[in-house]
Image (cartoon, rainbow, N blue to C red; front, side, top):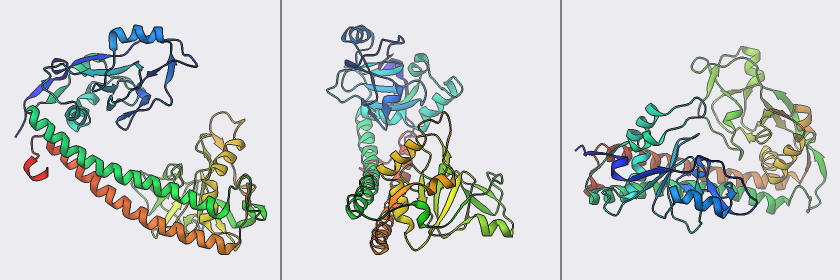
Length: 398
């Protein structure tokens, strides 16, 4: 069944925030812009503050109430969020969708509709700009939205919210597991910055049997015998993200020199100041090469890879890396020699091995969680596709 469509500007009162640039204050009212709309919610922590007077002026045109929907109109376009907060705030370069008393659309249904492929295609077709995309108020008002009966909208929203909650729960558990690994590290070894457990001190180089750079050969998007690990494949938290892999061929010497093996530590030597030094332990069975922006370290009998990686991803490790890059403008580089000079406590190898076993157990749980997330994500996307084509069997899915 295909639903009738309605034009958003006729169904709702669609406005936008101020186009002016009020003077920012150290204290005052938050001014929410597109960057503050994140994952369906409003992040006030990075919002600039304006005076009460400027807030009053902006509110005459675009007063925000609970139940309204905000929509990012510049930069990362979209990210719709339902307003549900006691915080008083103003908006700039953000779409404001308000609901009339006789509106024949449910806000929780509309939030999913705005995130559907049907609406995203309209936005993509009409958005302007190069790297800095933006949509006009006219485009927002002219969006065509599937418009089933109000009761059906509420049923669709309920089904999608259940599916979305399953995804969110998996993500929350993943964050908790990542936090747990760092908590265990601190419990077992203490804060590396203080060396509160009085372990012998050394440098990373003391714990390495070998350290070398990756291949400088150019990788290809499709062709090649081996996937290539690059800096974007290591997350800030020290996990692997194997999306967007490129490939290359290696000769016999290259295979020996540039293929990562289980237990290799890979360190991102070149990146922005905030991201340089991302570190992860390779534990995959598939042979993968590693690129020149990565440094590979193999440990000796003084350390296990998971200890060094956890230290590099700790608050101490991140702050150490930041201090090493303070005077750098643009891309930062920490070469292999500098990496090996980073100071660290060296606890007994038996204690490190105990920590390693805990990390392995947490990684197994994380692997299962990622599988569950993929299943729930696929379910959610399938339901989204069906919902806005009128194909969702509500009686079977409620």
